[in-house]
Image (cartoon, one colour):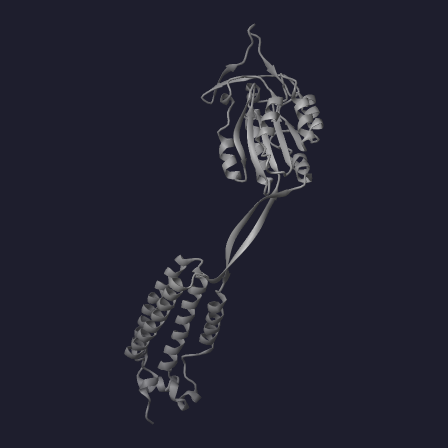
Length: 386
């Protein structure tokens, strides 16, 4: 019986030629189509162009496949003689082996293209951002350095944590910051960028204002002047202070703000017990504050004053307890305020086209899985697989 040697020995040279032709056609088609679309079709783009660099891996796959065929040929030669091999199995199809790899190779190429997400069809969309304007008035008087809430944290530290957490809960609102002691100073104008606001917040300290005291009324007036008269949207002021107001005009300023539709909420910092005020230089405590008679100056939370301001401002009051900043009441009151459209953003969107590469790639992989290199009895009757 004559044995067909082709069934047992792989022709590597034929496989390499076929592979080179495939690569030439593949890269010619990819580069030509890509150049045409990028130069002539403005609605076309690749969402993740860097992913296309993975196509270089196809050359590595080719090298691995060719090396595997050479190894397989040598391994069969070492395994047994041709007469013995013909009795063990019916051989394998060189054409089918090459065809299987071509399917796999094309599938991987298409998966990479799909991962880069080609897009076509530019659409313009408009998204309305709704919210309110919120000015935060932060007390930075020396009394805010007292550590009567939790050890190793002064009132100002906890207040800044409070504001940061408040910003994390806001959605679409514009926020600004006013700092005050004996005077008030606008630290940050109204902005929708909370990350920028947090950067400004980080740099706030008690040395920013030389005039000492606690003038909450002046802070409310500066917050009111910081609101834009052009925008008719709703507004709110959040005051964070120990409430030791020495000017006694805060309640009046809160009532006037309410008449203009502004809601004022207050957050109390500190305890009702009198505690000394540390003197801090370069981040180190060097003593405690004393008056002219060398008596220790004590500070305590004036809760009644802050409650009156919140009531006059049609808002709510909450007290800080430890690092549990208890902002839920403030947030709930802010969320009750009707939000208006602050701005409309227009942006372009593109329709994804990755599915046109993903689905064929999956079908090719399925077909590759269903085809076997090992020959069956019927294969001897099919010219393609001889």
